[in-house]
Image 1 (cartoon, rainbow, N blue to C red):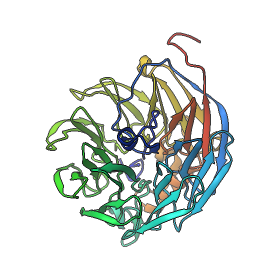
Image 2 (tube, rainbow, N blue to C red):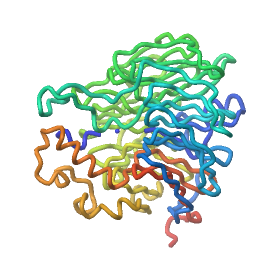
Image 3 (cartoon, one colour):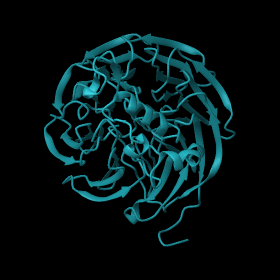
Image 4 (cartoon, helix red, strand yellow):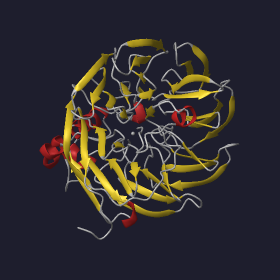
Length: 452
């Protein structure tokens, strides 16, 4: 693995029920709702036609939150948007001072999101008017001088696969409503959801682009310093931390943890999927992802964990107890986002601009897909045999050079990569693309295995 397909999240589950909503009864939708185990068994629902698509003026790496007839999403054009889910028309937009690669959290009538301008924002969900904003120590991409030993020596280089900043979650702990999120300044913050004042902040030894998960009063979140932290959500005190491995590009945690049945599941850039005891952080098992980063989050259905990989281009199905692979589904490129699962169908995108609908009962044998218009236009010139191949796209350029890697990534972005994690609501699939569009795709009438 050269500096090539070394890679990058967030999510909105089909249930659109966050922990905050379950406990308070308030309407909410937010990116990392991955502590919920996907319920019910429904027939396979393939991808249908485009219901609408909404254009922004920048890449969309943010994931949508869908609630009360509106889809909320951020764009690299510095705006946070509210879009009418029936018509695909803009309801409002709010302009920040930087790219909005954070995925919004909606709680009751407020939208919370972070921006690359170093602020967390709270907006009125109906009007987009500012309620409050909080300034952190600033946001930045991971990077360094001569990053990963790339040439030329002495040049400052940003990580070309660090696509996301931390997305907030909103929850009530001991009767107090708080917003939790990480920042590139190395802190994890707990803010008063009503006014943005700091309740506590917790210092790590690196940027925090992972998004937090709250479970039983404990906040779980990973950092670029290679640690997964368990923090008392009320006090901000560390309960335990677990160190992952690796060095250089193969280190750090971008993925957000998933908790179920007393176990914390998460992937890391060290190419492993981990299962830890949620109470004390002890290792239960780890799965070797064959040199591929795991930057999306785990979704649990039944006894299986579903998660994507980078360089191996896979959606994995892992048995939750022994941590053994049950089956794998091969895509055409990196899988950075988190799948949305509804019934027996998993929806997830890849870095070549393709969105998949996989029938989980078929164990990878039955699926449908959708390609962005950008993918259709540029696939022949960028992809090899319709599949991402970094060396092919480089066309002989020296991949020990940072600028050569950046040139390849710029070419790949022409495909409209889907790193946004999808949301499913009332038979419609919502997701963003690096082509600048928020897509709404109708899902076909559910099919049983074996039907046409």
